[in-house]
Length: 468
Image (spheres, rainbow, N blue to C red):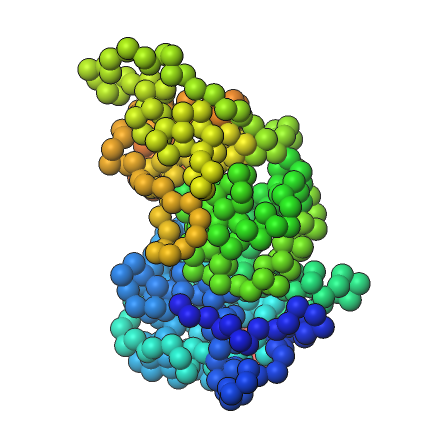
């Protein structure tokens, strides 16, 4: 996607204006209308709208992507300017209400799988620019995605009105004067359009973000979004600003870690397209997020492991007749060493080291298993690490054996990987959170039922008052 290049606010005094969604003068030769559209394109990219509203193989923004949640799949909507199935008839006010409050023009409520609780912080000027982009440049697609079909009471969309009363803060972001221009820009982007908390903050039983643990880590389907608070051991307090910037731009933070899964998608579709000043601002802000520590983390995830090999143990040793009985060193030599090298040291031209790597230094090992299963696919031409998928080559037992070998040699020895874990993740489930999600879904049903009853009671009381 070609992005705005000339219409970027300068890093100096214009940055505070950008925090309010105001950009500097229009680019030379461009009309105010063209400038507004291009600004909106940049902002919609920062918001990563395309990632959720585009189905695999589908047209951009036409919806149809199934977003897995503990209560069922939520199907993303068509947000092209189609007048039959999209948002082509929306006024600016209706578009604003949809983005900030999750309420469609017909009054239906969206589910908070759309991060409107974050988008609520977006300024009027930026909303207007995004509206201009969607209406004037996005291609209309006259097709309707499948409808979301959730169990009772979650299929009662009006119950989301009560949910919003409890959990939606409609206050647009207001800069904090003593924090400075750069910090405020970073806070505005991280809390708003780039919606970091949507993935990196755990949720309560009613699926609202638990801000008492803001950015302390959350779940995105089977993937774990790690702690990105300023804590040295549990978060990114030991990362430099430049490492954070590099990670956001390329998905690669030097030797410390590589983006995969939903984070790699965010880099590919959104973050890599942000200008240097905005990436710097986000990094500055994240380094100040209050630290939240996990007592089990005795050192940072990137501080585990060392170069090592077990070549002696496999020299002259034939492979077993049952390949499920291959040892960790045998599997590593067959599948990993050609890229990551004999001692896990990686290469100078960018193939990552396996030791001092966040992927192996955490006790939450689902992401490591998922990377082995699914690899790290990236969009063509995107910088950063790529890796092939091994789900068709290796069995559950082989992946468990290989994964255990990797973490015992190059990672956190307290971590574990089991064949049952691999089997669950291969099927798209998260074994470490299955029990919690079942509890969450049941609690949500009870809570949702209570909300519905409260709404009914409110409406009944209001009706009685009118007739008295």
